[in-house]
Length: 158
Image (cartoon, rainbow, N blue to C red):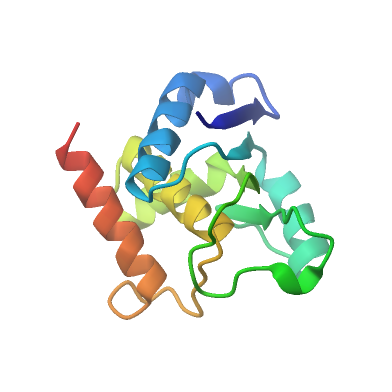
C-alpha cells in the first residue's frame, strides 16, 4: 500500500483538486508502473510560492506548473537514478503543483483541468522515479512519450 500525503497552501485548492481523486489517480499511475509501498507528498501552492521554490532550487526565477523533489534513502548523493526507473524505493519525494499554472496550461493546450492535473501527476511521478527530459518535445522525449501513453491508457480504463 502506498502512502500519499496531499496538502493545500490555500483551502480553496482542495475544492478543485479533491484529495481522494488525486490519491486515487496517483495510485493508478504507480500500479501501472509496478510500484507499491512507496511514500510521496503532493502540495498545491500559489504561483508565488512555486516561483520562490523554482528560484531557490533550480535558479529559475519564474513560475512553473510542477516541481518534483526526489528523496533518496541513501546518504550518498551519487545514488540518484539517472534516466531510468528506480528499483526498490520506499520514499520517493515531493511534488509541488501550482493550480494557477495548471489553469494556464489548460488554456494553452485546450485540456480540461482534470486531464491536465492527471498529466502533471504522471509527470511528477515519473520524475520522482528518476526519469527526466531535456525538452518539452512530446514526440521525441522518452519520458514525455511514456507520460502520454500512461495518460491515454489509464483514461481508457476509467
